[in-house]
Image (cartoon, rainbow, N blue to C red; front, side, top):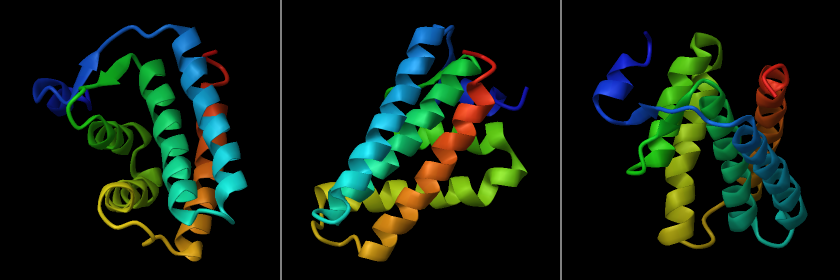
Length: 143
């Protein structure tokens, strides 16, 4: 199984997740995209952070649908490690990008307010929209 290392190290755990919880995570991703769009002109940092959260929620929905949940410690990092394996080579560059944005979002939220440029915020939002749509398509048969 391709997830063995993540399971053995305790970064993820096997768990049955209800279709309702999967749908709820996807719903959060959609809500976050809408909010990120509405904020992009007023507050790039928050728009960026919320677009990132849309990616995280869609990733969690996909992870749940595969029967896994991230460990509570470093859950964002563990979710993206899972997605890197789950989506494979085709999406490797995109998942690496999202993981870099995870670190940038952390700095923007906790350390350096005002560091997100308009280009960064718009690029993440555009990629987040496409990603959420792709995950929604992959999960539509499971819901």
